[in-house]
Every structure is written in C-alpha cells, then in structure tokens.
Image (cartoon, rainbow, N blue to C red; front, side, top):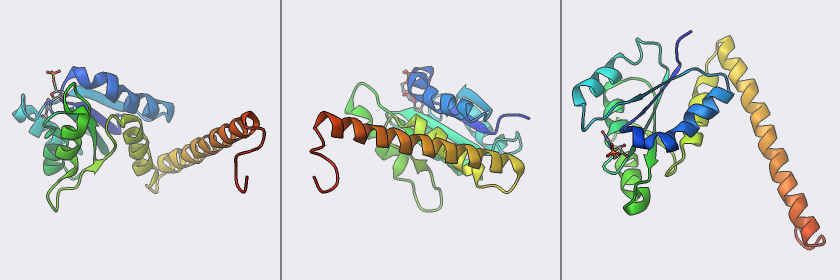
Length: 175
Ligand SMILES: Nc1c(C(=O)O)ncn1[C@@H]1O[C@H](COP(=O)(O)O)[C@@H](O)[C@H]1O
C-alpha cells in the first residue's frame, strides 16, 4: 500500500519540527510521503501536489510552514482531503506569524491547526482521522490509539505519584 499521509513543508529547514509528525505516524505503522512543497516558491508544483493528492492515495495532508505560512491554506483550497497545519517557529516572532497565517482561514476552506511546533499532535490527529474509517485498517489504528492513550494515562499517574512522594503526601486531591 502507498502512503496514507502526505507530510509537506515549505522548506527543508522545517524538517527538525516536522519530523515529529513522521516519527509518530511511523510508530502507528502508517506510511507517509515526505516532501518540500512551497506555495510561495513553487506555486505550480504546490497546486499540482494538492490537486493530485487524493488520486495518489493520500487521505490526509499534514502541512508545516514558518512565517507567512500560506502552504496549508493553499493546499486546502485545491484538495478535498483534510489538511492539518503546523505553524513552524522561526527566529523572529516565535511562530505567532505562522500560527495566525494558518489558523485564520476564510469560511469554507478549513485547516485544522495545531500548536506552534506541534507536529507530533498533527501526526496523532492524522492517525485519528484515519482511525475514524470503517475498514480493517481504521480499526487497527483505533486500537493502537486506545493503547497509546492508556500509556498517557499511566505516565500522568506516575507523575502524580512521584510528586506526592516528594511532598510527603502533601499534594493531591484534598491535601
Ligand atoms: N511559509 C513558507 C512557504 C509557503 O507558505 O509557501 N514556503 C516557504 N515558507 C517558509 O519559509 C521559511 C524559511 O525557509 P528557508 O529556510 O528555506 O529560507 C520556512 O519556515 C518555510 O516553511
């Protein structure tokens, strides 16, 4: 089977952030296709990528960009697939520029925007979108997600236990 999730970014300089999306999807055994696609610098190829994404078998696109981040919104304009936008923080403005560029989409063209630098959550959201299907593959991802969530619950409980023991039992509900 080909890649179900396309991970694209405006430049290879975004990869240290965007890698987290690829890594968590690999943990779920979900195949990804990674590339640099820039709305600003290669508009024709970007439109082509978005227009052909669904027919190439992609089911979700994760798009990250920094600064004036038009890439996620422009992809959402030309594909019927769900697009998850990742604001990439740059040296100036700490990613606020990118966040506001991605999140403030006009009505009719949704981009699901995660937090600044939140590529791991973008990957997890892509997995959840795939898990919402009715096929066997979706059921498999759903089961894995439940196991993943159980891991989060256990880790949070351990954090509480550690803190309570450091404080001699003086924190926690009703302390
Ligand atoms: N925001 C965009 C777009 C776009 O939205 O089309 N294309 C490149 N970029 C961003 O420019 C930043 C600097 O890129 P360089 O490091 O290549 O100079 C990157 O964060 C990229 O996502």
